[in-house]
Image 1 (cartoon, one colour):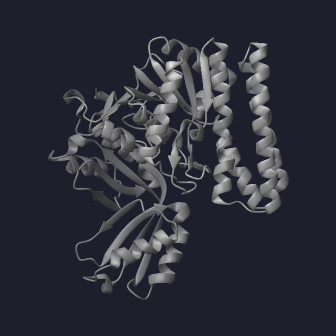
Image 2 (tube, rainbow, N blue to C red; image 1 turned 135 degrees about the horizontal axis):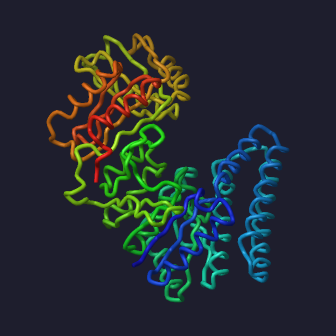
Image 3 (tube, helix red, strand yellow; image 1 turned 30 degrees about the vertical axis):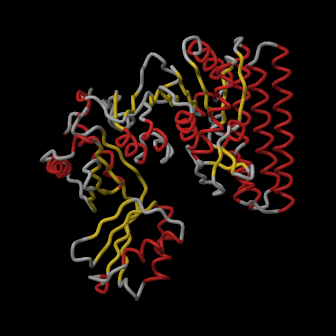
Length: 467
């Protein structure tokens, strides 16, 4: 098979982990053509983000301390991972060149006293630049030919929207397939840095958090992979969070649309655009645990088999949200009211997670993250209060509970079962939404009621007996 195998930061956080990954890839490469995609070592991207925040706050010593920690950690891991002395020397030499460039970049940013979106992307790309060298040299230590490539090196071309860039797929497809076909023909395993690409001017860009998954699917679409594996520290997608529901089960197979919904509700931190390159090509994806290779994980396909078409696949939740109830008599029958509300929030950089409007049009209720609540209320008050809005009511510390499953479509009585199980547990529901696709039924409860609600629904639909 032609495989793209992506490792998250938790799978390559120590020398032992990297050696284990190299050993597994060595075994897989005997019968498959493999392209490897890697995230930064666990915690490195967070440290790089903190460096840019420290520079913005003019805390030079904090930035220098963090970069020293990054350098020391990677040196330590390199020395412990590679046993062959000539390879170890070569790896440390290459890493030192990256360290010098990283320090020079930070010095320049400190000197200017500013952090631009472009310089932030350049800085944040270093986590993957370092990790791919460690994994590539670990493969060489196993006697395999390997080459480390950044997103720019492999040929991922993006727009210039730094921090949230999008690939220019036609150009990317040509460049990536050409680069990787050459490496495959030489029996060389490419180890590619996730999360990054470069715009048409050669400036480093990033896809945003979770972007390494997106890189893996872009690469997979470019080389027409047979499967893409996302390797992390979880067995796959579950019927519920096992920390809340002890009887939660691994889902063996889900559709792309179900996986997108599950990812949005925290089942796994997958980049929202991850599935875009797969849908057209219908490439299957597996979500697997790099520490539990006996488990096949969850298979994500365009059309799952009949045997796994459950009414409800999983129940998930998002904690710590705020609910804003927007009211006003002048909203009734006035075209563009919702547009004004949402454009006001968009200008303030606020993501609206859920929307509900009553048929009389006299009120719209929206859900945003708790930490966006003040900003959202301020923006609405400044722009619209006293004009189309007469009153704003705010409720904090709310949780969104979501039932996900394509089998809900056209099935009578799903909502009835949900709300009777909620009522039995004396939980008050503040808001309900369901799209016409019937793929996701969501409602809002207090944070303190979320765990009980999740357990009640999991029991009601007997999700411990799926598959």
